[in-house]
Image 1: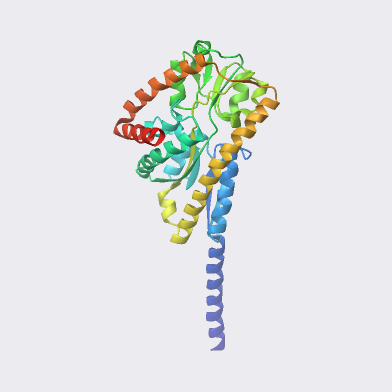
Image 2 (image 1 turned 180 degrees about the vertical axis):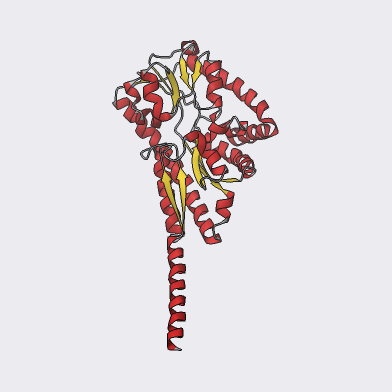
Length: 330
């Protein structure tokens, strides 16, 4: 009889140990991101992952796979959608070919500073939430890159100086802009930028001071023109299916950490702009204040592009432009 009791007690103890062990292990999410660890977006996401683990009491851990090491940038969105990974990051405008709304923040000279970018996200976010919900995803937070500026081997004084140049384009909007400028769009990912310039595959690009400094652009271009074309945003999305598998407390931990990451990320982006612009200057880049003629030409192209964009985006595009302009100009 005592033997039986001991066996029962032993089994009960083993079950309790297994249950406690499983709880201690929790859930681990693999998270692909497209940029290297030293990129401020990745640094912010690493902090987000730490916050999630802390706020969830270890119930959820997020393992960050940076620099496209798990999935390439172009594959991340569909990897989350298809359930290959529960969470991921990508630049929102990359999927503007699926719906123009995703590229609203990359329309040239539409929202060109942080205050305007924040107001644009206010009106863009509800539509993005609705669109991604249909694909089984939830946007957790979004963080802008610093303003996009012009990198070239020669000084650009007018839009005519950009004609026939091989122009790096990382989304559909940049492809259209390049064509409007009379340049030739070339698709090049961030890690490949130095080699693309070195081999003559690319002669000009619009990108942030972050990417410019991180890729040591002074090694392959000479001029940095501060045109502040737009502030594109990265977005972190989670699979609805994966999110709903979490208990309510862990779900709230994710949402709270995401809210903090968005606020922190915008602050990091502002600081990044100042720090990386200084690095470019310190390394010998010619820092050019664009001529009035160049800016007039660029803004005229931007005005025409936003009209075309609004038409292509349909009722959502009309609503977004109207609401954004109310916030900006009233």
